[in-house]
Each structure stands twice: as C-alpha cells, then as structure tokens.
Image (cartoon, rainbow, N blue to C red; front, side, top):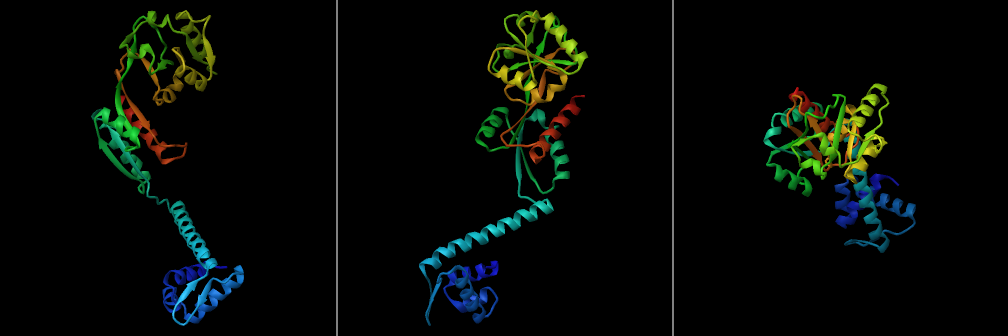
Length: 295
C-alpha cells in the first residue's frame, strides 16, 4: 500500500466519480481503476460499488476513507515538522508585557533574541503592573516584566557581599521597608550548605551573629526554597543562588543598603520551559540586560 493509492482513493471517495478523481490525481481513468482494485486486494475488502452512472462506497469503503484521510493528514503534519526542525522555521509567537520601568530592558533583549531566532514572532505590550498580573493569569501574555520594590536590611546587620537572605513573599518581613537584626529574632532560619569552605565559614559566622546556631536547619537550595514557602522561616545562602531565588515568584530577596537600588525587575512566565527552549533563552537575555543596566 502506497501513499499515492490513499490519495487516489480519497479523491474518489470525495468526488464519487472515476474520471474526475483521475484528473485530480493526474493519472488515467484505467490506472485509477487498477489502483483501487489493487488496494481492495491488499486489504481484503470491497471498497467501491461501481455502476455506469455513479460510484458508491461500501460500508468498509466509508470506514477506510476516514482512515486514509487521517493517515494523509498525519503525513502532512510530519512533513511540516521535519521541515521546521531542519530549517529552523516555526510559527511560534511570544507576547511580552512590561511596565514603563522595564522599557529600557525588554526591547533591547527582544532585539538580541530576534537576531538569533528571526522565525519567532515577538509582540511587546507596554502595560500597567496590575494589568500584567491579570493578563499573565489569563494567558493573554507569555512573559511579564515589571519593577518591584525591595526590602532592605538595616545597618545593624553585617552581611558579607557573598551571602544573601531571603523570605517567602507572604512572610511578615516582606512588608517592611527596613529590617533590623531584632526583626529576625522571632523567626527560625534555614541555611543552604556551601561546598566552599570560605563561604561556609561566612554562613556560620552570620548564623552565629543572628543567635540562630542552636535552631538552624540546613539543606540544599531546593530544600531550603521549598521549606521557606511552607513556613515563616528566614533563609540564608551563598550569592551563587541569587538568580534561582530572584526568579521564583514566591520568594523575596532582602537587600543591604550598601549602594543598591530598592527596586528590581521581576520576570515571570506561564510557559513550560526547558533549558534549551526559546523562552528560556529570552528570559536569560532579559535578566542579563537588566543586570548590565544596573551596573
């Protein structure tokens, strides 16, 4: 059985006329007749009842017509996907919403992205932050980029530049604009273990300065982040984990007052992404552009 036979049978099944079906498939009427007879012999059923005036499909012919159409549709879809995979051509479209404070970051990032993926369509929408939240939830945009006020750690907390402190978005300290050491007293603490002996020593010193040595819980960054979302704990970790923490919409970094802005860009997406996806690459570009603009 060949795909050409399926195409010829579908043409006959739709037109119900041998001559017209032969013209449509660009073969002679006698060749079409032989093709249908061969098809019937191969599957073991009579597909067509013939008369001088019309062509009718048998019950088996009607069932086989649906199979043939579905098979040909699948073939075309497979051809399309193979072509797109080999030639890098897709109809993918990404809609990015951003606030005015991100207007120096998003267009630049999208320009860099399109230089590498010209076949992906990008639509940019300048919106108010509340509208971005609504549209992201409804799936009307794929990526949201907005500015968010950051909490800051007060001058009585001496935190090395190599360390970060973070909490869950719904933590009581997340609503304070300035946080002192005394504010930490009522909350247990998580610590993310570091393989660097120097950084681990800094973590131990910081934990001791917060009087948390006897109650500290230690784990991997994934365990700490997961535990933080289910409790009112505070977490401390190495600066190497900044990106993974800041990109999580349920967590909030606490920043020191030493020469940094009290706002940061928050990038969110409702897309399923993997390490090598177009969306993942665009998110990385936006983050890198944002960091370079702050330096």
